[in-house]
Length: 213
Image (cartoon, rainbow, N blue to C red):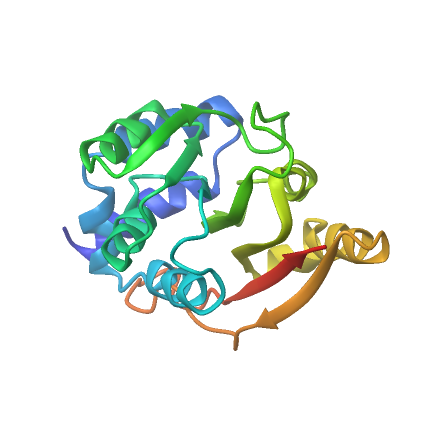
């Protein structure tokens, strides 16, 4: 797929007017999503896999993929030896693509920011890649994601730099830190996750790692 096709999809999802519109867009995009994102040099999955490999022992599972999409990150983690993977997404189209990989033990249609039907402290780590960005996952989702992470587990995720300050993520994690629920472990350098996009190459992000206390 061409960069133009990728940029057209990105423009639509970044300007979606409602959750239903966003879900419908991702359902429609699911078939070509992987190729489209590869065409613009999408590097979030590689960054995420590297951080999981650094902080999460192979035998520590399950790993919760929050906003699984087509399962790109899970596919890399499975190759690395992480075999107990659980994922959620709000798009049935994306979940259908993720299921074809046959690497997730459990995939559910769930909305981040709402209550999650997973046991408190049951996850060794939560990973989330490219989900917390413009008009996507809300900062409030981290209350539930922190709840389901076991003490000593990790929250590993990306957030766009503009979104971090402007959409409540900095305040949310200040609150979690202040409550003694998490500890900051690492922040990566700021980077461009879509360097070959003609419209989004300027977009910057940072990956962050927190430890659940």
